Image (tube, rainbow, N blue to C red; front, side, top):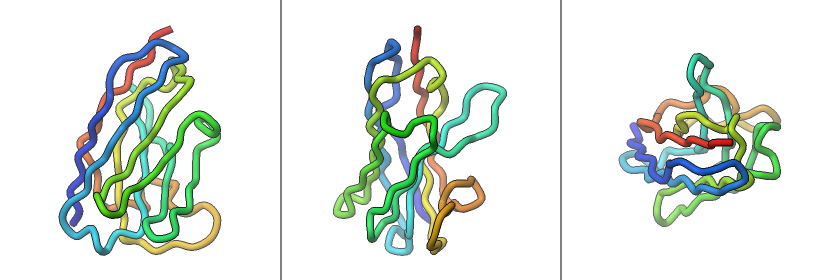
Length: 128
């Protein structure tokens, strides 16, 4: 099992920027990918971005493409989410996730079922 702790959430006006961090500990050697998801009130948790741990391949939801950037630091066992040009619809609790599932090809690491470890979440609020 991998333990994940997110940080960096907060409140910002539309058009602003925020950076989220996720620190991983525990059985990190078995991690194949990490991702960010978000959940707004009364909505299902949705995919935001993912990154493979070895090759660094990234994938983004269409709604954040070009505005969000996921990155990792293997030495620190950390993953980051840089968010710019934030919109009110980006308001949600953001969750970091990790998986030891190996997947190749398109569509990998885009659903909650692909991940087996989750952080506690951090709130991001964007006001108009």
